[in-house]
Amino acid sequence: MQDIKELSLSQLEEVVVSRGFPGYHARQILSWIYQKDTFDFSGMSSLPAKLRETLADGFFILGLRPAESQKSADGTEKFLFRLSDGNLVEAVDIPSSRRNTACISTQAGCKFACEFCASGAKGFKRNLTAGEILDEVLYLKKNNRCGRLTHIVFMGTGEPLDNYDNLLKAIRTINSPEGLNIGARRITISTCGIIPGIRRLQNENLQVELSISLHAADDKLRSQIMPVNRKYPLKELFECCREYIGKTNRQITFEYILIKGTNSDLPSARKLSGLMKKLRLAKVNLIPANPVMDDGGKIISPSVKEVDEFKEYLSKEGVNATLRKERGQDIDAACGQLRLKYEKS
Image 1 (cartoon, rainbow, N blue to C red):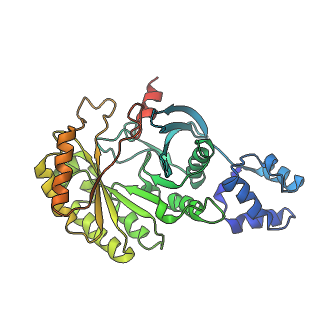
Image 2 (cartoon, rainbow, N blue to C red):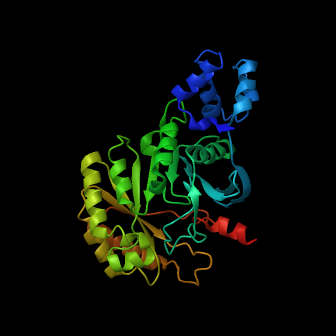
């Protein structure tokens, strides 16, 4: 059986025609899947019965199965999905008054072992296919309170730019009028700083948002908490960022998790300010740390006062800095936590 979501419109038209039916039915199929949330061919009433039978014999629509979910008092809902081979991934639905954001995984596990993130605690399993990435999006869209998604962030389990081809294939479907028709500017790719991937992305002519996990403003500390920095150190990363901004004229957001006793003091803010001033279009998104299961108590959020002083320093230095509103604090909201908890049970 083949995942029908792996086919482009033109490929699906070829399939439909090869089965002896008019090609226009391909657009109808995509509309049933992406606009009408229909994941069973038998429910596609505008298609000839014979075509529905033929499709059901060779294709499937949704391949993942929900394994567990947790819902926060603030409406945030986290889902744990089991893939066809038994691997587990997470996705999060984040509602607010004006938007409904889906946080999506791109890999089962992660290679990059950032100290503050639970995603790589069990190591890397495999890349998700484009169809599996779309499975997460479609499931969240159908099962959230308003039946729609306005924004997509690739900030779940895994490193998106380490699964570049499948990521971009999924994004083009999410962005296309025949797919979910979500504007590129409402799609965010978060990376730990994979320079070759950033350079590929700048040539895609896609106005997606780019977010880079920074979390430290000097190589020694960043290499300690983010081993990827040993391969792509800050000087090379920021040169790449300058190239990206010059090529795309788009702002880059730098994610900065504030960890008490590690990177949340004023000297750290001073170093961060110096880095940000090297870029023409950049902002910092400050995130109070979320404790990681089995980290021995190393990952602790700083006090509200310390967070406010850090942000105030950046603002006084002319750095565009925001503080991320904490969501899902009463559930296992941080990346990889629900998966770890489930596998331990």
